[in-house]
Structure formats: structure tokens, C-alpha cells
Image 1 (cartoon, rainbow, N blue to C red):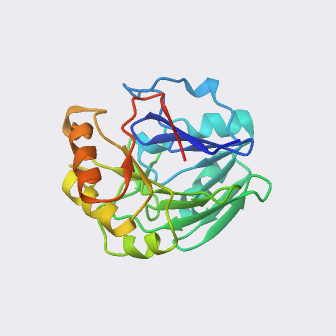
Image 2 (tube, rainbow, N blue to C red; image 1 turned 90 degrees about the horizontal axis):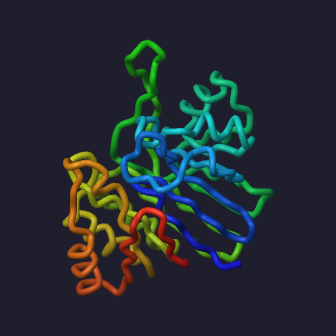
Amino acid sequence: MATRVQWLGHSALWIEADGKTILIDPFLTGNPVATVSADSLKPDAILLSHGHDDHLGDLIEIARRTGAEVVCNYEIGVWLESQGLKDIHGCQHGGTATICGGKVRVKLTLAFHGSSLPDGKGGLMYGGNPCGFYITLPDGKTIYDAADTALFGDMSLIGEDGVDLACLPIGDTYTMGPDDALKAVKRLTPKQVLPIHYNTWPPIAQDAQSWAARVEAETAAKVSVLKPGEWVEV
């Protein structure tokens, strides 16, 4: 089975590879552009980049119902265990988790953003450091999900390992915007690019088609601008 990725809206992604399924940043309930419901998904694993509610989303409900493995930073892992979840891989930047029966490797990468968790009293508490993911799939394909981040120079180091698909935020305001996301493509030199984290709400509205045209004019990458629910084959 070919590796393919479905954009679920905002930063939520669904990966299918060799019969395994991986859900990333499962913000579905309350997501105005989501095309699927949390209770319709049965992932083998869930990756969480940081604790903000537009990424944490439905993770606890889905993991409790399905028993999915969870990969996240160490601090969030401890918090998820306090919520009753069991199969947690709490890592830190540069660390790797092997999931899906040993078929998939996930390395945590840098991300320049924030992270917090609900404290149960209407406030927020420390959520460790945010991260991205460098994912190696059973067929050898690699996906870099930058998640919420600014541009940073060490994206060049990630690119040295080879990136088949880079999932990059372009929304601006809370992450890098189109100009810096183009610079990120030039540092990463991926074969394919999928823009994420845009057009969910007015503060992150962007013209993804115009951005894609710039990327394809200035780099060798092919850009897939998807509607929520659509797929790209890696």
C-alpha cells in the first residue's frame, strides 16, 4: 500500500502506510473546517506536537477509545498518564520513538512556538517544549511535520536527512507566514510540500494557491494544496 496523507483541516493529519494509521494533532471537535468526527477515527498511533487546545483537541478521547500509542514531549506524556492514558512515548528533541509494531520511527524536532496544557480550573499550566516530527515510514518514505513553528536555520539539517513530504504552516500570526515558509522549503529541499495551519480562522487566512505558485517557481518541490478531507500520495 502506498503511503498517503489526508489533511483533516488546521494542523490535523492522517497518515496511512503499510496498513498502519497515524493521527497528528487531532483537533476535530470545534474545528470549523474539519470534515471528519473524532469518533470516526481508529488510529494505531497519535502524535502531539504541543499542548495548545487546537492541537491537543480530541486526543484523550480517541486514545482512551482506541488504545492508540501516543508520541509527545515528556512533560505532556506525564500529564496524559495522569489522565489515565497508558501507551505513551514521552520523548524530547532529537529523541526517537519506534511505534506501530516497530514499523514506524518518529524523531522529535525543534519547533519555535509555545506549549501549555489545561489546568482543569480554566487556566493553563506548563506543557514542555513544542516539537515537530520527522517520520520514517515502512516503505522508507519520510514526512517532516513542522507543526507550529517559526522559521529556523536548523531546518537545513532536517533536510540533509531527506524529506519526501514537508507539512509546513503558512498561516502567519501564530506560526511562520508564507514568506518564511518559502524560505523553509529552500532549506528543507523536500520533494513535496503540504501547507497546513491556515484558513481556519481570519487571523491565519492565506492564499495557499498563490504561495504554491511561488514555491514551485523558486524550488524543485511540488506543492499539494488540499481541501480538508483530501489526500496526497507520498
